[in-house]
Image (cartoon, rainbow, N blue to C red; front, side, top):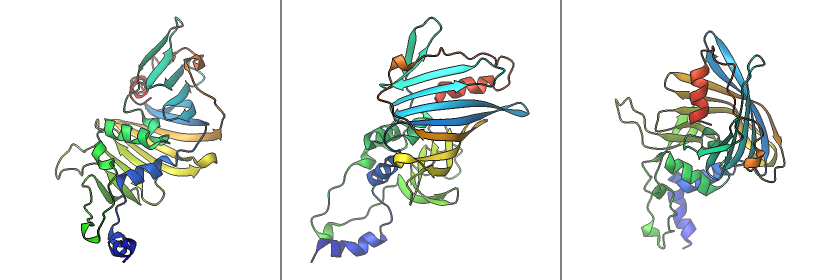
Length: 274
């Protein structure tokens, strides 16, 4: 008898896809080629909101350029280049300074493209070990077929949609919540992520763009008592042959926020998540 015929009753009841397959399908939603993404980042600033404008040039998950401008009354302009696992900025003395890109770099979650890039970040964030994503050999005989769901992958519900939930479940009564990743079941879109630091990212209102990019128009990043909202204003395909440190053409300059309540949060945000 054909093995597929024997497998069908079991497969029909096995709702959990292989972890590797789920992440691979999610990475495919990151598009191809280069994009320019513009978004507003809103910080609570006393009784009001302070909005910074970000422009991202995205070549892939490891090659990006960020330019940030502040309100007209400030002199704030930040520019960062991400390349080769390093985060580069241009200082006033003309020196290009680099530091390693941190695992909490939020934007990389939404530009994986390659399976290995995705798996590296998931493992670095301690959401799941590499063993969860290992390929499993197909059984040779029907009696060898087993369905043993991994405790670090299960079906759940987030923001009203069914999701693939990666990570250890929270212990009953525990205040500390394990790191995790929540991916929409049918569309393979990241809906939520939680880092070991308890930082949480929520993503909503996805739109389809050219060359296969699916990107959320609305996101929020929450850590400690702080919450920052991100709203996409424009996405366009843009040809970029490559991004190198020579692409830095603006000095890192955070001025004009000296008397703003939001300044400490802005500084922490761009140090940790950008």
